[in-house]
Length: 186
Image 1 (cartoon, helix red, strand yellow):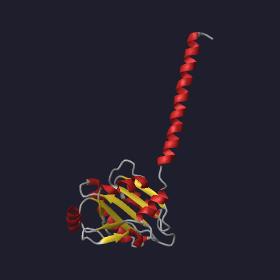
Image 2: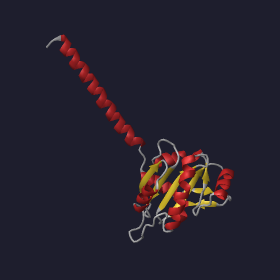
Image 3: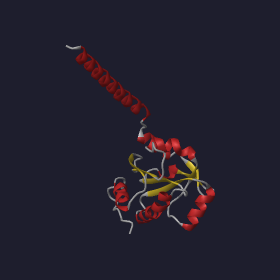
Image 4: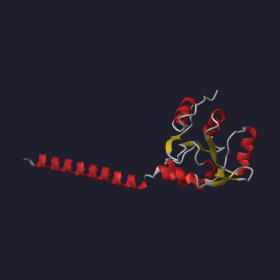
């Protein structure tokens, strides 16, 4: 074997070893930081957040109902754009609890709600909700972010970014009870 061939084989072995080590580390670290979605969903039910009227909303009151939890803010254009769609689907499907967690302040949410009434609650929090959003799957820490939880408290789906009607109806169908008809937002 020539010296050149030997160096190439050693270089390939080193690169292959580094790639395998990197992949192994990624898998180990990924598993350590990948949250248990159902444990994170359970944390939703432990939340107590104020709304724009100052009334505290206990998420435990919605245990046993399928939930669509939308993280949004008044300063987020895609969030504001999808709110009418979320509201129409919520009105058409009263057996599914919609909640809009506002990452904002009371005054902005009150002004938004005054101009854009919603049929579902809009509890308010600050950026302190970020660790829970990350546990639920929002690693990018971006808005809007929507979580779909079945009646048994299982995290079924998550969506980062604005929802379109067809997509929202498909995701809601994944959490609706079998005996409940899904109605479109029309």
